[in-house]
Length: 365
Ligand code: NAD
Image (cartoon, rainbow, N blue to C red):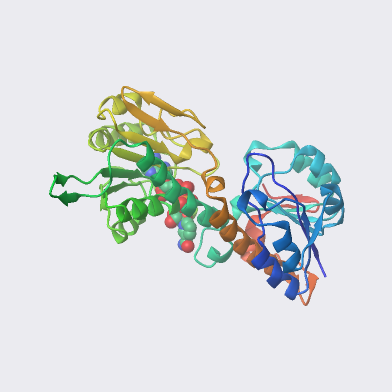
């Protein structure tokens, strides 16, 4: 039966790709699981729990890399790791393939089959393996918690003997998976929530979590349900429309992305000029350059009393539930790779076909 390996992620990644509860089930199905010592420690899953679940906990990552038939990672491997991975193995992980990283060339040379998690179809049928969605949910939640922490006010309306406090006005720009969770979380905290997106389908989604949808003057649905990049003319129209709404919001959370491209620039400096001191912007798109002109990825900057946070890799900052969800998605993915206890890649299966970036001898990037 297939040997599945996980090694420790790099220093700034707190998640682990498989957790003990899922390993126990996979071992029950006949998988052999090798785990590098300490892999789960930053998400609070202990080596002892991995052993109890039936995994072999090993000291040396190279031993795992050279033995595993299937390697699961969250962050792309280093060149050194890529060199040690077994010839002909299967690799599953986030790849950042659009940056054309060197390790992918090594994988091609070593006949490694690569499943890129970024390429999993965004359909209801693929939800059970869709890590982009599960991790975006966590990012949306955490963005609101950061905003609430940075804001000088509270979110809910409070009526007490000491008077009435108004609820905070929260605007979420980009109502995909992260944006929807941000809206839902802000609403749970009692804020008045507003939503903006350029995909028509986002309106109903936003309303379903109690937000007021700001009707966009431009609609730009692209391929596969994603948004497309706006033209220069459309960007101008969007800018005029959004400037007043941004100025009226105390908290703005931006999540807008266009696949394979730099995140669109939506909040310009002149829009921030219109915000009141004490307002907060949390830019979830900072990993891909950010939606706000003033965002500095990985930093919190202050401009005329407005705080602009550009947190990176938000799911890693909530590592336990993020790992639980990632792991469940990966345990499901593994089931797609085996038939009768043996690895059998059926590229007639849409999820495998679409997410396969490198098949031995063929590139699909
Ligand atoms: P994403 O991270 O790619 O982008 C976030 C949001 O930003 C999207 O809603 C997008 O429309 C919006 N956006 C992009 N450019 C914008 C701009 N200039 N101004 C305003 N908004 C802008 O999105 P995602 O969360 O990865 O979701 C991508 C698509 O996949 C969506 O259509 C989503 O509904 C769909 N999806 C479907 C399922 C399913 O089960 N059917 C699951 C997950 C995602």
